Amino acid sequence: MNAATAAPSRTPPPAAMPPAFGARPHDDSRSFWLLAVFGGLVALAGLGAAHYMEVHGHVVTGMDNQIVWGLPHVFAIFMIVAASGVLNVASIGSVFGQPMYKPRAPLSGLLCLALLAGGLMVLMLDLGRPERVIVAATHYNFTSVFAWNVILYSGMTAIVAVYLWTMFERRLNPWSKPAGIAALVWRFVLTTGTGSIFGFLVARQAYQSALLAPLFIVLSFGWGLAVFVIVQATMYAWNGRQLAPAAAARLARLLAIFVAASLYLVAVFHLTNAYFARQADFTSFLLFGNGTGQPYPLLFWLGYVLIGSVVPFALLVWPVARAGAGLAVSAGFVVLGGFFFLYVFIIGGQAWPLEIFPGHVVTSSFGDGQVASYLPRWPEWVLGIGGLGAAFLLTMVGVRVLDFMPKDDLPEATS
Image (cartoon, rainbow, N blue to C red; front, top):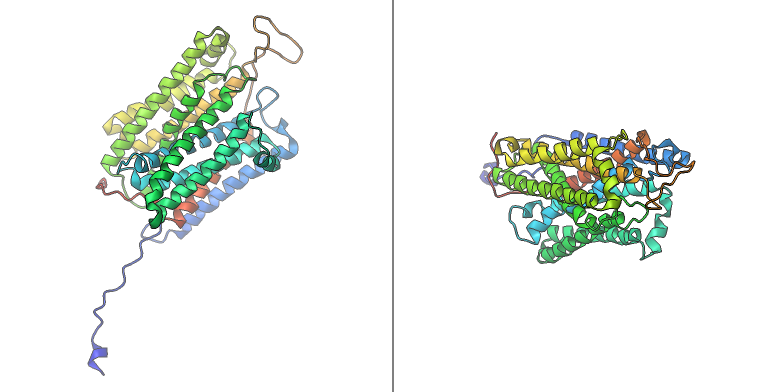
C-alpha cells in the first residue's frame, strides 16, 4: 500500500455548525414544532372567535351601545403601545451608541414587528367588517386621527423592516444609525397618534386630555422593555445561558425608571382631571367607585398601582430580589399592570355616561346618565389571546430563521 495513502489524515475535522437560535446543543426540533403548533392553534382560535362574533353579531359579547371597545381593544392597544416601546432597546444601542444594548437591537426590532402585527390583528377583527380594511388603506380622511394611524402603522412596519436589514446585511451596517433615528422618530409619532385617538375623542369626555400623548409614550417605554426582558429571559433559559450581572443590573435600573415615570404621569393625569369640575365626578368614580359597585377602583389600586408598579419597582431596585429570575418576574408584573391600567382606562372611560347637557339632569327610557356595566365573554378573551398567539408565533419563526440571540462580551452569570 502506498505510504501516502496509508498515513492517517492530519487535516482537522470541520468545526461543528453552531445550533440555530432557539436550539440547544441537543436536538430541539420537536420542542420548536410543538411550540409553533401551539402558537398557531392559539392564533387560529382567535380567528375563530372573530368569525363567531362576525356571524352572530356583537350581542354574543359583553359590549353594548355604550361600551363599544371591549376586552379585545385592551389586548390590541397593549400590544401596539408595547411594540413602540420595545424598539427603545434598539434605539439606545444604535442611535445613542450604548454598547450593552447593540447586541439586543435585532431582537428588539423583531418583537416590534410581531407585537404590532398581533395588535393590529385583534384591532381589525374586533372592529367588525375586516374585509373593508382595503378601503381604509386606499381612501384617507386626513381630518380623522384613525386615518393617521393607518399611515403610522404601515410606515412603522416598513421602517423597522429596513432597520433590521441594515443590521443583518454587513454592507448596509453604516446605514443602521440613520435607520435607527428614523425608527426612533416614527415610533414617537406613532405612540403620540395612539394616545391622540383617545385625547381627540369628543364622544367620550373621560378621555379628553392633552396629557394622553406623552403618557402613552412613557407607558410604552415600560411595557416594551418588560416584554423584551421576558422574551430575552426565555431565550437565555432555552439556550442554557444566564444573563450577565452587569446587563441585568442596567436593564433593571432602566425598567425601574420607566415604571416610576409611568406611575408619576398617571397620577398627574388623574389629579388634572380631579381639578376640573366637569371631570371631578368621573375621576371619583374611576378611583373610588362612588358606591356603584364597579370593579375599576380595585383594578386600578390593586392591579395597576400595587401589582403593576409598586411591587415591580421594589423588586427592581433591590439587588437581591432581581437576582436570577427576579428581573423577569418583575417584568411580568409590569406587563400585568399594563393590562389592568388599560382595562380601567378604556372600559371605565366608556362606562361613565357622557354629559351632553352640563348642569342639567337628563333622563329617558334609554338609560341616559346611567353607569354602564360590562363583563367580557369568552369570544373576547379568545380573540385577545389569539393576538398574543400570533405575536408569539411570529417571534418563534423569526428567531428560528435568523440569529437574534444577543451576543454579549460581558461575562455570564454562574449558577
